[in-house]
Amino acid sequence: MKKVVMIAGAGDAVGLRLVKDFLKKDYAVIAGLLTGQEGVSLPEGVLSVTLDPLSHQSAKDAAAAVAEKYPGIDMIVVNYDNCPVRENWTILDEPDFEAMKLAYEYNCLGPLRAIDAFRPLLDKGEGKRICCVTSADSSNNAARDIANYPSHVSKAPLNMAINQLFNGMRPDGYTFRMYCKDVSAGPAKAGEYAAEYFTRNRSNEPESYKHSDENRLVLRDWMNIEIPW
Image (tube, rainbow, N blue to C red; front, side, top):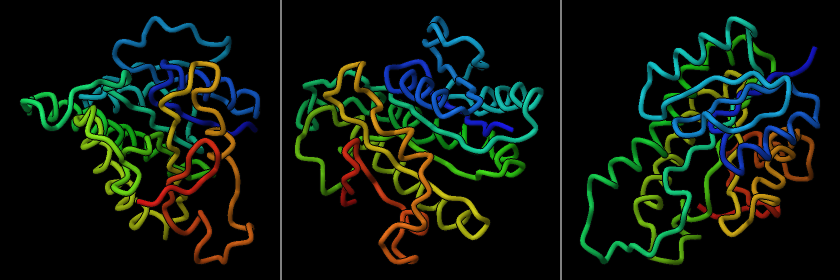
Protein backbone atom coordinates (compact mmCIF):
# COMPACT_ATOMS: atom_id res chain seq x y z
CA MET A 1 0.00 0.00 0.00
CA LYS A 2 1.26 3.47 -0.87
CA LYS A 3 2.27 5.89 1.81
CA VAL A 4 0.03 8.96 2.03
CA VAL A 5 1.22 12.57 2.35
CA MET A 6 -0.93 15.61 2.98
CA ILE A 7 0.60 18.83 1.61
CA ALA A 8 -1.09 21.85 3.16
CA GLY A 9 -0.15 24.73 0.89
CA ALA A 10 0.27 22.80 -2.36
CA GLY A 11 -0.64 25.61 -4.73
CA ASP A 12 2.49 27.79 -4.80
CA ALA A 13 5.80 27.01 -6.52
CA VAL A 14 7.22 25.10 -3.54
CA GLY A 15 3.98 23.18 -3.01
CA LEU A 16 3.65 22.14 -6.65
CA ARG A 17 7.26 20.96 -6.65
CA LEU A 18 6.50 18.88 -3.54
CA VAL A 19 3.43 17.36 -5.19
CA LYS A 20 5.45 16.27 -8.22
CA ASP A 21 8.41 14.99 -6.20
CA PHE A 22 6.22 12.94 -3.85
CA LEU A 23 4.42 11.43 -6.83
CA LYS A 24 7.82 10.38 -8.20
CA LYS A 25 8.44 8.66 -4.87
CA ASP A 26 5.16 6.75 -5.36
CA TYR A 27 3.26 8.46 -2.57
CA ALA A 28 -0.48 9.01 -2.63
CA VAL A 29 -0.65 12.81 -2.52
CA ILE A 30 -3.36 14.99 -1.04
CA ALA A 31 -3.03 18.60 -2.16
CA GLY A 32 -4.32 21.11 0.37
CA LEU A 33 -5.00 24.27 -1.61
CA LEU A 34 -5.02 27.40 0.51
CA THR A 35 -7.31 30.37 0.02
CA GLY A 36 -6.34 31.92 -3.32
CA GLN A 37 -4.81 28.71 -4.71
CA GLU A 38 -8.05 27.02 -5.78
CA GLY A 39 -7.46 27.49 -9.51
CA VAL A 40 -4.06 25.77 -9.58
CA SER A 41 -3.69 22.86 -12.02
CA LEU A 42 -2.66 19.62 -10.30
CA PRO A 43 -1.38 16.34 -11.76
CA GLU A 44 -3.99 13.72 -12.56
CA GLY A 45 -5.00 11.49 -9.66
CA VAL A 46 -4.14 13.96 -6.90
CA LEU A 47 -6.91 14.42 -4.36
CA SER A 48 -7.40 18.08 -3.46
CA VAL A 49 -9.05 19.79 -0.50
CA THR A 50 -9.27 23.47 0.39
CA LEU A 51 -8.08 25.14 3.58
CA ASP A 52 -8.41 28.65 4.90
CA PRO A 53 -5.21 29.23 6.94
CA LEU A 54 -7.12 31.58 9.25
CA SER A 55 -9.87 29.07 10.10
CA HIS A 56 -9.50 26.02 12.34
CA GLN A 57 -12.90 24.76 11.20
CA SER A 58 -11.74 24.89 7.59
CA ALA A 59 -8.79 22.63 8.48
CA LYS A 60 -11.11 20.23 10.31
CA ASP A 61 -13.47 20.11 7.32
CA ALA A 62 -10.53 19.33 5.03
CA ALA A 63 -9.39 16.53 7.35
CA ALA A 64 -12.92 15.09 7.38
CA ALA A 65 -12.96 15.09 3.58
CA VAL A 66 -9.61 13.29 3.46
CA ALA A 67 -10.80 10.72 6.03
CA GLU A 68 -13.55 9.65 3.63
CA LYS A 69 -10.85 8.20 1.34
CA TYR A 70 -7.90 7.57 3.64
CA PRO A 71 -8.36 6.20 7.18
CA GLY A 72 -4.85 7.36 8.04
CA ILE A 73 -1.99 9.40 6.59
CA ASP A 74 1.75 8.98 7.02
CA MET A 75 2.98 12.54 6.75
CA ILE A 76 1.79 16.13 6.74
CA VAL A 77 3.75 18.95 5.13
CA VAL A 78 2.76 22.52 6.02
CA ASN A 79 3.86 25.15 3.51
CA TYR A 80 2.33 28.49 4.49
CA ASP A 81 3.63 31.92 3.49
CA ASN A 82 1.53 35.07 3.50
CA CYS A 83 4.52 37.17 2.38
CA PRO A 84 5.74 35.28 -0.71
CA VAL A 85 7.17 38.43 -2.34
CA ARG A 86 10.12 39.99 -0.57
CA GLU A 87 9.37 43.59 0.36
CA ASN A 88 11.53 46.59 1.22
CA TRP A 89 9.29 47.50 4.16
CA THR A 90 11.47 47.43 7.28
CA ILE A 91 10.98 47.40 11.02
CA LEU A 92 12.33 50.99 11.10
CA ASP A 93 9.39 52.24 9.01
CA GLU A 94 6.02 53.23 10.47
CA PRO A 95 4.72 50.01 12.05
CA ASP A 96 1.63 48.21 10.76
CA PHE A 97 0.66 46.03 13.69
CA GLU A 98 -2.40 44.67 11.90
CA ALA A 99 -0.16 43.31 9.15
CA MET A 100 2.08 41.75 11.77
CA LYS A 101 -0.88 40.08 13.49
CA LEU A 102 -2.15 38.76 10.15
CA ALA A 103 1.28 37.32 9.33
CA TYR A 104 1.37 35.58 12.73
CA GLU A 105 -2.16 34.19 12.26
CA TYR A 106 -1.23 32.88 8.82
CA ASN A 107 2.39 31.74 9.13
CA CYS A 108 2.41 30.42 12.70
CA LEU A 109 -1.14 29.60 13.76
CA GLY A 110 -2.16 28.44 10.26
CA PRO A 111 0.22 25.47 10.27
CA LEU A 112 -0.79 24.62 13.85
CA ARG A 113 -4.45 24.59 12.82
CA ALA A 114 -3.67 22.13 10.02
CA ILE A 115 -1.49 19.88 12.19
CA ASP A 116 -4.12 19.75 14.92
CA ALA A 117 -6.91 18.93 12.45
CA PHE A 118 -4.96 16.14 10.75
CA ARG A 119 -3.37 14.66 13.85
CA PRO A 120 -6.11 11.99 14.28
CA LEU A 121 -5.29 10.74 10.77
CA LEU A 122 -1.55 10.87 11.50
CA ASP A 123 -2.12 8.84 14.66
CA LYS A 124 -3.71 6.12 12.52
CA GLY A 125 -0.94 6.14 9.91
CA GLU A 126 2.42 4.40 10.06
CA GLY A 127 4.74 7.26 9.12
CA LYS A 128 3.93 9.73 11.91
CA ARG A 129 6.00 12.54 10.45
CA ILE A 130 5.32 16.29 10.58
CA CYS A 131 7.21 18.50 8.14
CA CYS A 132 7.34 22.26 7.88
CA VAL A 133 8.51 24.56 5.08
CA THR A 134 9.99 27.75 6.50
CA SER A 135 12.84 30.09 5.58
CA ALA A 136 16.28 30.90 6.92
CA ASP A 137 15.13 34.31 8.12
CA SER A 138 13.13 32.50 10.81
CA SER A 139 16.46 31.90 12.57
CA ASN A 140 17.89 34.51 14.93
CA ASN A 141 21.36 33.59 13.73
CA ALA A 142 20.61 33.49 10.01
CA ALA A 143 18.52 36.67 9.64
CA ARG A 144 20.83 39.38 8.32
CA ASP A 145 18.45 42.13 7.17
CA ILE A 146 15.67 44.37 8.44
CA ALA A 147 13.25 44.02 5.51
CA ASN A 148 9.97 42.15 5.27
CA TYR A 149 9.72 42.10 9.04
CA PRO A 150 6.11 40.82 9.43
CA SER A 151 7.17 37.59 7.75
CA HIS A 152 10.39 37.35 9.77
CA VAL A 153 8.76 37.81 13.15
CA SER A 154 5.87 35.45 12.37
CA LYS A 155 8.03 32.51 11.31
CA ALA A 156 10.33 32.54 14.34
CA PRO A 157 7.48 31.53 16.70
CA LEU A 158 6.56 28.77 14.25
CA ASN A 159 9.97 27.25 14.99
CA MET A 160 9.21 27.29 18.72
CA ALA A 161 5.73 25.85 18.17
CA ILE A 162 7.15 22.94 16.17
CA ASN A 163 9.82 22.48 18.84
CA GLN A 164 7.09 22.19 21.48
CA LEU A 165 5.26 19.63 19.34
CA PHE A 166 8.53 17.73 18.96
CA ASN A 167 9.01 17.66 22.74
CA GLY A 168 5.52 16.30 23.30
CA MET A 169 5.12 13.95 20.34
CA ARG A 170 8.60 12.46 19.79
CA PRO A 171 8.05 9.97 22.68
CA ASP A 172 4.99 8.72 20.77
CA GLY A 173 7.08 7.88 17.72
CA TYR A 174 6.65 11.09 15.73
CA THR A 175 9.55 12.59 13.78
CA PHE A 176 9.87 16.13 12.43
CA ARG A 177 11.51 17.97 9.54
CA MET A 178 12.08 21.72 9.09
CA TYR A 179 13.08 22.76 5.55
CA CYS A 180 14.27 26.29 4.74
CA LYS A 181 13.36 27.17 1.18
CA ASP A 182 15.64 29.25 -1.04
CA VAL A 183 13.83 32.59 -1.31
CA SER A 184 15.80 33.46 -4.46
CA ALA A 185 14.94 30.24 -6.32
CA GLY A 186 12.68 30.35 -9.35
CA PRO A 187 9.78 27.92 -9.91
CA ALA A 188 12.07 25.27 -11.41
CA LYS A 189 14.15 25.02 -8.22
CA ALA A 190 11.59 26.03 -5.61
CA GLY A 191 11.30 23.26 -3.05
CA GLU A 192 14.37 21.47 -4.38
CA TYR A 193 15.57 18.73 -1.99
CA ALA A 194 12.51 19.17 0.27
CA ALA A 195 10.80 15.85 -0.54
CA GLU A 196 14.14 14.06 -0.30
CA TYR A 197 14.74 15.49 3.16
CA PHE A 198 11.19 14.84 4.31
CA THR A 199 11.25 11.17 3.31
CA ARG A 200 14.78 10.18 4.28
CA ASN A 201 15.40 8.08 7.37
CA ARG A 202 18.25 9.83 9.14
CA SER A 203 18.42 7.58 12.21
CA ASN A 204 21.31 5.51 10.82
CA GLU A 205 23.54 8.37 9.72
CA PRO A 206 27.03 8.92 11.18
CA GLU A 207 25.82 11.19 13.99
CA SER A 208 25.11 9.56 17.31
CA TYR A 209 21.58 8.42 18.05
CA LYS A 210 21.11 11.33 20.42
CA HIS A 211 22.13 13.90 17.82
CA SER A 212 20.51 12.42 14.70
CA ASP A 213 17.83 14.42 12.93
CA GLU A 214 15.27 11.95 14.26
CA ASN A 215 15.94 12.94 17.87
CA ARG A 216 16.35 16.69 17.65
CA LEU A 217 14.70 19.48 15.70
CA VAL A 218 16.91 20.81 12.91
CA LEU A 219 16.63 23.57 10.31
CA ARG A 220 18.15 22.50 6.97
CA ASP A 221 18.27 24.36 3.68
CA TRP A 222 18.03 23.12 0.09
CA MET A 223 21.75 22.23 0.15
CA ASN A 224 21.30 20.06 3.29
CA ILE A 225 23.21 22.59 5.38
CA GLU A 226 22.11 22.85 9.01
CA ILE A 227 21.09 26.38 9.93
CA PRO A 228 21.71 27.49 13.53
CA TRP A 229 18.58 28.61 15.33
